[in-house]
Image (cartoon, rainbow, N blue to C red; front, side):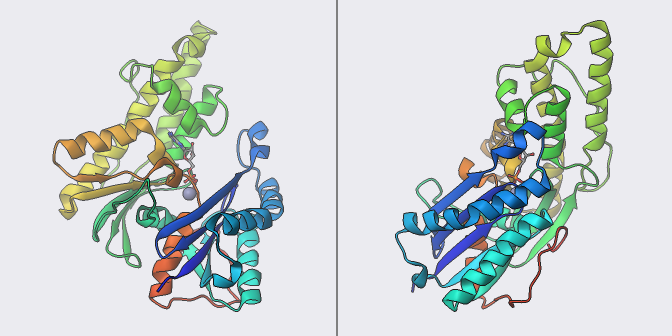
Length: 338
Ligand code: KG4
Ligand code: ZN
């Protein structure tokens, strides 16, 4: 039997809708909000308005591309949190009203669990997925976690950041260098031609499987402040080396904890998820370890690294199979909920 899930993602600055037939992706549409670029970061008020503007057209296109009618849908899955409250309210309200009109259930989805489950979306670019249980390093603009994924519904956080997320470390370093927002992809591009060992920055000393990135940002800021005193053009002259070095440090911090998690759990399948999993340096490091035979790596296709609704729909599909539906009086949450 085919189950058709419409997924809605509106937690931050992308309005997305996707249609899945079981785990197979029929369509995935994302409207990016360019309005934030000139502010150097996401402006919550503007994000909510843009979601309001985009959501109906995005869903219409998703249904058209999937070549199904809305009456064929089995359920509507939506991001309940974490994220920006005003943005989440738009997706949540839309999902409720649309599903009610169609007489079908709604399914709330946790955004971070969905990033992990994006590995189970099937399409031409992604045919394989890890088997439960596996480890997942979730690295996004708001979160950094090592998760033991026992099943689609049972996940344990083994370690997480105590301050900034890995994506924030990329974005803040980029901002310090005067690069446009979001800085992660900019650093990644520049790092390709730089020397990762040109400059070294201290790594945090933090126990167990937790992370910390705020000290790195501060030492990067102070390092550049001192160099700029001697040479106004320091950043311009060394931008590739700076990008490569900061990227190298962030990846080194992530990889050390990931290796520790593999050792502690004995799990040998390692997946990465979230916006930063698009980083070419991180992908390379994970793959190298995989080639060395220490673990089997699962890298999502680029389109499933950053926020998308296909991951929300697949998370909704697993809940649909378990009969886990959501009541119409549900409200979104900005934090937690894992
Ligand atoms: O998962 P995501 O789209 O949104 C959140 O849920 O946060 O992640 C966005 C984050 C941003 O910090 C962005 O700079 C980072 O992912 N990012 C990257 C790359 N592409 C996106 N960071 C490093 N290298 C990349 N190629
Ligand atoms: Zn995300």
